[in-house]
Length: 135
Image 1 (cartoon, helix red, strand yellow):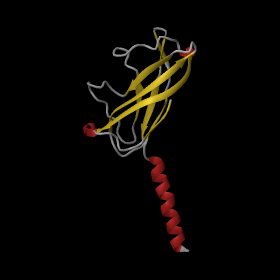
Image 2 (cartoon, rainbow, N blue to C red):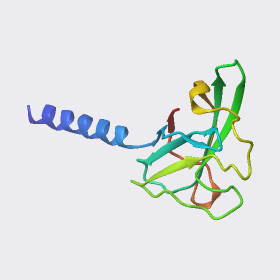
Image 3 (tube, one colour):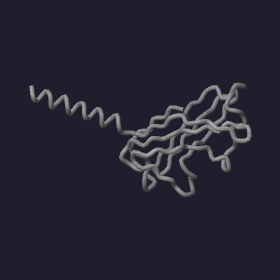
């Protein structure tokens, strides 16, 4: 009986550890800048590694049928990094000084989908943890 309890305990602890790992990205608060919708995403780093850079490219479908790609970034690619430490949170933003504005108000956004994710850990290597995105 004791062996069964230990086995159940190990399985339970393993499933909790698995659920706690990874990088969760969820939809943040949209803002409006000069009439243009500026989406954002919120990152929660549940992994054991520090994230130096995270970028999620989101295709936004507009009410008129057009689609636009928006790059949401944790920092400027060639600039100062803002590391996201284990257990930390950060906001991915569109850098309007280096990208084209969406060209539509937030009310015109009808759907979003992720097309690319770039995650770099310390030293410029790819993140070992999985990245889960819900745009």
